[in-house]
Image (cartoon, rainbow, N blue to C red):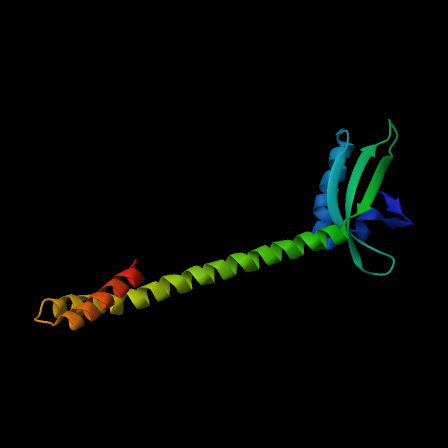
Length: 145
């Protein structure tokens, strides 16, 4: 296992990322030309940074050349976008559920209004009463549509 500043590399890897790191380094030992992976590593300040690694064995020696790029900021921005997108999806689901419930809640009494209006229109009405009830019926139909 590689040693950095007299500390085995694996000791600097976040515990949840150790198996992935070991797997990638094992592939290099088995002859894979290069490996790319992201893991969290402990800094001298004691915090975790996400690094993107590219590693390749050097010739026939027991040496691996590694280049790492700190991608913590990018990763955090992607996580924030994912959380925001999930929040938007959740809000959309809530809105759809609300609209479906409101549609049901409005449709039932509106059908009652239309039915009673149609019955009233079948009675003897003067022109003004008929006009009012037809307006109620058109409005109810419009809301149902």
